[in-house]
Length: 466
Image (cartoon, rainbow, N blue to C red):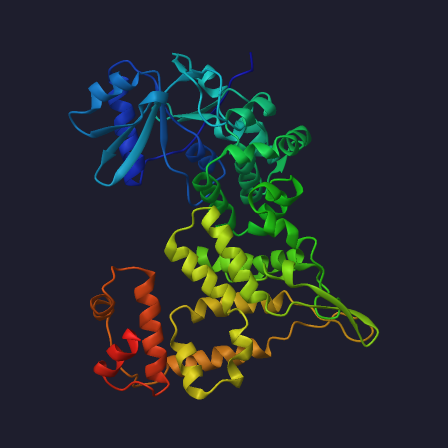
């Protein structure tokens, strides 16, 4: 039996969810049930992270006992009753309460065939994924209890599976990606034997639904250490299972004189490191996939005695490939539309100075152009050319600053032409419901208006019907 460690903490409930948790624990405690805050919230609390994970409770009360005790004062939803979980809802706050349990065999790399309720939280801790997520906060005593060595691993910045890594992974194969996410987000190292077992079991990700894969990928991509996470997915053999197209980028070379930083994958990872911190998720995916088309458009030649690569039309091929990828991972229609738009147009900021003034104005007023510039900025900063002697030069940012200037000039006009049509107009004329098609139609009409081709609402409606 592992040694049990405890740690006193100075903790006071401040947020509505924290206060709700204390109230629920108090009510269950008065009926003789042991209840603790567990999981990511406790981990983040000990790491002193500004943003903590959602609060989850673990108890020796059965779901039926929890429901009976709380349903008079709260809405209690049997969200995972088969596995011992109910969700308590109060004024916008939600908390999952799960009964201490032991789990039977896993048949689908996600769900146990059956669970057995138990009274001992130390046994409950032994079924959890990582030691840093298996810590129990007793809010009454204000102490954290560690049954599996989580305190030590937090101090050493080590990510370690609870018990046998192979067993934990085969219980839920998504833990392969969760291991990467936690290691990259927290800057932790994985124990060597865990890395070996992750590589060995990489193919188990095929059993996980696309929706769950995407949810985990979103969490990796949106954090600042995103490139570390994607590189770990590559090194552990996971990228090949979920995003083989991106894995192939690591085998797509680029001209040394234009891209001394390295191949397409290396360039993209550098760009992810250099993107502005406020970039939203679709912008980040647009950046991750902006050069995807290069893997099928690569042409190797020689120019002035040096090896040269070209990728003509890669943005259009990239749209085609990314469309399949995004559909496979169940991205929403709105997400897909934006990401494909970024891929298709990621060279526009470079080309915009050669466009007509009306076209420049149209691009400058496009809602997504500012995000496109974030992609272009990171792409430009991650493009490191060399001189004839092979010495590295500074990235060329002139096109970026010119594009920013055009956008500011377009958006800084004191009097802008009022749009000729509204979203409701488009839905009525085209007889469609609200969705991406409405946005596309509005942008098409707006561009024609700014180019001087449309001056009245009647003309805009006729244009739309074509």
